[in-house]
Image (cartoon, rainbow, N blue to C red; front, side, top):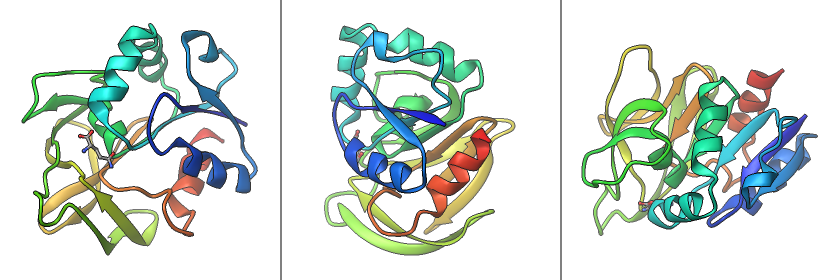
Length: 187
Ligand code: GLN
């Protein structure tokens, strides 16, 4: 199984470490030609969505990635990755891959709660310790989007067909439950 990990900016190495431990092969997606037909899944890591989005555009990767995601390849998108996937960003004009029918709010927890940890229960995954870093949350979801987890009355994880989107960083920590779930979606 071969996972393409978007590696233009952000926390991609941590995802690769976990995926390799779980037995998956990883390829870094740094340019258009890295997005090959034999990739079985895609990870969009956390980082800075504005920087990642700009690079995807400049490197000519945006449309290829969007096509692949819309054709049904499993995607795990975390934090900035969730913002890239979202159809709507309530406090930003920009749109990127826009394949996930949700409305997100960027940097939604304000300055005081910039980074924090909490343990919440996730559908089909169970209790999970979550690290939030200047995270977005999901204000509302469109038809067919399943809410997988909430925290403090806000949606923080969803699944829509082949797309998994979460506000936090599941790659920071030693619980591989979310990555296992993602790999199972591929199998
Ligand atoms: N604040 C970042 C953004 O707006 C996301 C932060 C993260 O990925 N940890 O893109």
